[in-house]
Image (cartoon, rainbow over all chains, first blue to last red; front, side, top):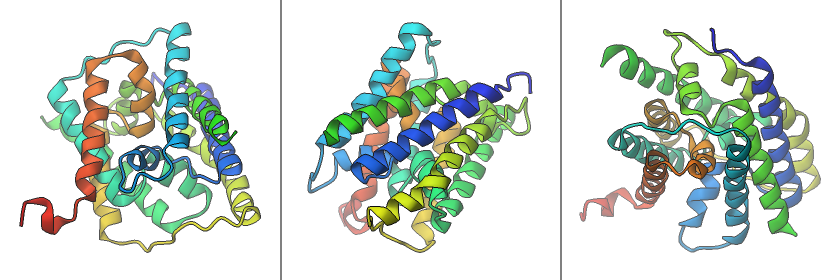
Length: 136
Length: 133
């Protein structure tokens, strides 16, 4: 546990929670990133503008952060990233949420569905990392 | 006004992802690597975020009379969460961090996000028509 960063983790988590409360209070929307993203491509299109605004805010945060703290480049293999992205997109659409929608927001409103989803995706993620790092 | 608040919420959410380490795939993979050099930081990210939503979400939902669809625990929920978790463990990104990491302009992140959108579109096509049947 040489890389444990409790303070920044907790502070970042609180910001994520506050942002989710902000979106719920101001827009009446759940800050589930997979849902916001998938909704952009849904038929019928519906309300796209607030989704684009939220995602633009996320992206702006990335540019702002990299201005002060240059991030190391992600040099993962493109094939693995394509497979990972497909699984994440398909899986979050099928289960109706991801780390934010089921995790941060779903657990916050004490949804049993979300609790089950969080336990399953955490366990699956741990299993996948075990296979990739220690078996393959 | 609604769009401004959505932008602001996205901005704060994204800063939280970077500050917490969620936007760093290596940190995420170190958290999921429970049999290796385990980094429990992301448990605290979730704890900090849920502590905030837990004390406020139900009150806001009741006050605004919001009605969220209530579905039971079913097979698509479990299968979808499992597939998502496997992808998360391979790539180190869940959807939020992937979007904000696009700012790093790396092809790996771009490929991940494009594949994620395609995956979401594929999941929407009914199984009976998916293979031309």
